[in-house]
Length: 86
Image 1: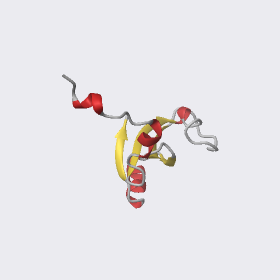
Image 2 (image 1 turned 180 degrees about the horizontal axis):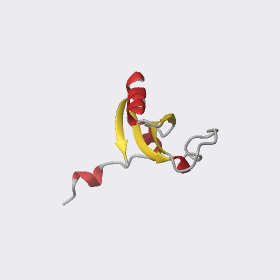
Image 3 (image 1 turned 90 degrees about the vertical axis):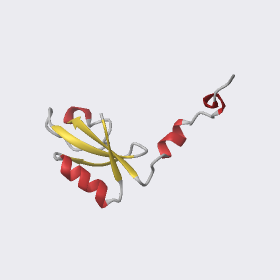
Image 4 (image 1 turned 135 degrees about the vertical axis):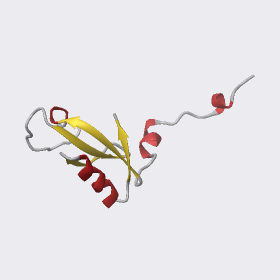
């Protein structure tokens, strides 16, 4: 006996990166030490700060804030549904 899961095609990473595109944004608490790779061209920020980052569904950075409420407001202003990730 086979299950329906065996008949489904796997989703490619490209397809996965487009799920939620234009409607979902990911909110993530980050340390300023971890920003360099995720926010290209970012100015120098003091080490050890806790910040809130908002990313598009495809991982592209949208904004960075020191306040969670501002990051959530940024999502709402862009008509995006914020989803927290850990």
